Structure formats: structure tokens, C-alpha cells
Image (cartoon, rainbow, N blue to C red; front, side, top):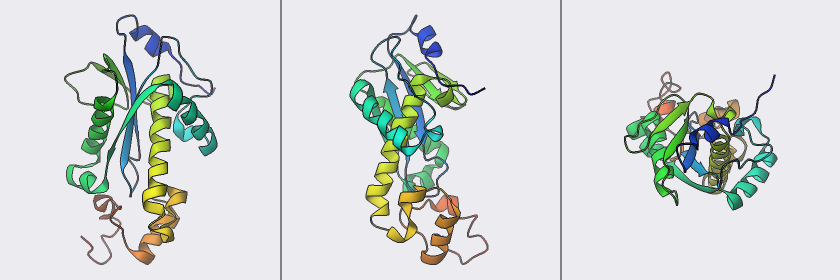
Length: 208
């Protein structure tokens, strides 16, 4: 039976907290491009949007339509960490940093955080981590959509336009067969995560 995110978790928490933010990231598994996180606060208790779901389960057109509506109705902010810093501090810490940046940039300070995943670190705001949270919580689902649309747009505008031979507009930095073939043909760009590619090149010429 297919399930969709709902407001049950938020509704229970709103008995104690007035401002709850859902937080999610996208791009963690990519081999190129930034990791992006979004934090979302809904405008009132019971607020919901038909069709919200984990961004990975939605078509690009559906994500875009939902983003347009969310952009005009919810409070949100996003954080972005680029490949050089991902290589420097590792992807887990980069993900945490992107999430913290998003939370810090919110117009209203959250009283409680709902975090997609099983790990987080914050000693200033109480939080709950939720595995597959973007399939269970509407605020996390909204955050996943916003982060995904912002990241995809950024990759197309800032990377794909400069490196057309890699077809970033198609894979958005994920490690597809076509993406690896482009790396084999043209090498790596400044937008590739070197720490993610060392193993791939371990039997080839030393690149790092």
C-alpha cells in the first residue's frame, strides 16, 4: 500500500511548540555539484498541500508546480555547500552544515526541528530525526521538494551551461553511466567531488 506524508507528527508537536521546521537535503550521493538543504515552516496548524511527497517520487513537472505553490505560501530558507568544502570536511559534515545554514537563514527561529535521516547535531534547538521522513512528514517533504528544485536549477545554470559536454542538465551531478563516460572522455571539472572519485580512478592515472 502506497503511503504519503501527512501532518500527524507536526500536529502532535504543535501541542507543545508553536514553530516547527522540517529539514531535508538533496545531492548527498552526487559525484558533482553542491549538497543543498532546505528548512520549511508551514504558516499555520493543519496547513497541508495535496500531492506533497518525497521529491524523488515526483516528476520534474510536479516538483516545479509544487515548488511554485510552496514558494508563495510557506516560510523557507536553504543552505548550500560546494564540492571543495565537501572534499575538505566530508559529505556528512557538509550535509549538517547545509542544514544549519538553512535553519539559521529562516525568518523565524524554529522551536523544534524535524530532520530527515537518522543523524543530526544541534545543541540549541530540540529536534527529532526521522528515517524516510520525506515520506512521512509534510514539512520534511516540502523541504525535499524545495531543496531539489533549487539544486537542480543551480546545477543547470552554473555547471551545465559551462560544461555542455557532460550533460549536467540530464543527470544533475549523479553518477550515471553517461556521466562517468563523460569523465573518462573529458576529465573532471572544478565542480566534481574529488573525494568521491578517488576510488573510481584508483586503477587509472593518478589524478589527485
